[in-house]
Structures are given as C-alpha cells and as structure tokens.
Length: 334
Image 1 (cartoon, rainbow, N blue to C red):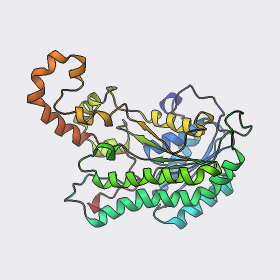
Image 2 (image 1 turned 90 degrees about the vertical axis):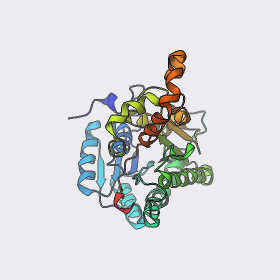
Image 3 (image 1 turned 120 degrees about the vertical axis):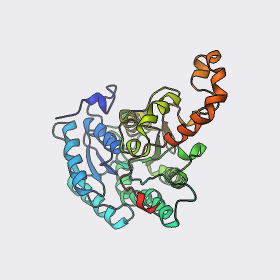
Image 4 (image 1 turned 135 degrees about the vertical axis):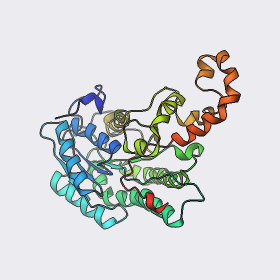
C-alpha cells in the first residue's frame, strides 16, 4: 500500500518534473536516503538504490515503486562502497536497465558512539573508508554518466530546458563537525572530508555543467540513526533544545533534495543546505542558559539556570547525535 505522499514530500512540487530521469543512490535502503529517492520517484524519476543488505535493498526497491504507478526501482544489494569495482558495475547496470544516470545521492555512511580514547585506529579507518572513500568511489563510478546528462540538460537560466535537469550530485553529510560533538570525533572528521570533496567536485566539474552540493540533516525523527544513537527518554529534551522546538522529518530532507535536483536549483553549486531547524547553532545555548525558556520567558528561568544548566548540557550532548542512516554500522570496531 502506497505511503501517504505528504509523509515524504511536500505538495508544492509539480508532478512529472523528473519524468524520464534516473537517480542513483548509495545507502538507498536507509531511512533518509529512501525518503529522498521516494520523493524523486513520486515526481517522475526511476531509480537504482544500492546497499550492503541484499534482502533489505530489494524489499525497499519494491516499496519505492509504489510511490508512482509505472515506476521502476532497481535494488542492488551486496554493494560495499569501499570497493570501487562494485559501484562501477552497479552504475553500469543502472544505465543499461534504466537508460541513464541523471542524479546521484551519495548517502552510505557508518556511525557509532566512541570517545577519543575508546576508538581504535582500525575503527577510525573504517569510518573514513566508508564515508570519505565510499563517497569518492561513488563519484568516480557515476561521473561519466553525470557529465553526459549535464551536457544534455544544460541551461542558461533564462529558458526552460525542454528535457528538464540532470547532471547533479548530492552528498549526505552532517553538522557534527561545525561546533564539535563528543563521542563523534571520527564521524566529524569523515564528514568534514565529504564536505571538502563535494566542494572540489563543484569547482572541477562545474564547467561541464555538473553541480555538486551537500545536504546536512540535523536530528531527524523516526530514523535508524536516531533510534540507535539516542535514548528515547531524552528525545523530548533534544526537541525542546532545537530553535524550532521539534525534531525534523525525513520529508524535509527529501524536499531539499527535490529543490537541488529541480529547475529551482539550477544555479546552486558547491553549497551546503543544513536541514536541522537551527539545531547546530543552539549547541552552545543548550546548557547554562535555560534555552528556550530563557527567550520565551526570561524572568521565570533565571533561578533555574545555575542549578540545572550543567545537567541539561550533559544530557543534551549525549542526545544531539546527528541522524545518519548507518547502512555500514561498525559498532564492534570501537
């Protein structure tokens, strides 16, 4: 049974804007990436999702097809993004069966909680290999197809291309490294590398019409990462600490994806769209200031700040873990 459309994409987008287009997504069986792909499929695209878990990937592909009558979604399992030859084979199959690769979402990631003292060199290498090298391998495997699509769908910004858009890649990153996050140093380093990679691709491939951007999700509700990395009893406190007062929804990540891949995102290149309700900017306010009560009702919170501030900060830090679809979870390595 098809999921209610508003659960994964806003109703402001026009049906069919991605007709005839194909999106290739690593980590596509995960909560966030599957929502991104589902939105694209609903709006006309076909898709190829790759992941390590074959059974889960095939099942997700079938589920994604329900987003639109006649949609075709290929699920390719047993793909380790650390192995470039596997991604090359998957990309070739995608083009052969679906006709092209117009959009790419590099979303495979690995995450676990570990302090600086706890994490081993091998565990650190694992995260770097999955996030950074995996994203690099994804770009290398799909760039020939993206360049072809970009050439076909290039626009001057003044006239609407008859065949729509193409030749775009999105890297799914994080906000962990913006202000520093305890127990997430390894992922912070990896995501900083992914961000740098995306900017380099934007500069080098922009002249060919390819755009490269980053989406950095904040705490997103009902995702694998949030369920695994955050304690349920702390979620309400996390939500309250976010300026918008709630956790994000996968639909909001999907909407950012549609924007970047659509005609509306034609001139956006080498940029990062943070979708977190202002969460990362409030990290310093989470402890010692009684936020958000300190701005909603300043007088009533003055007496609480000194007694509760530090405890709030500690609990917040342990909860403010970036929501990531840990398609390649390596907890045993920590």
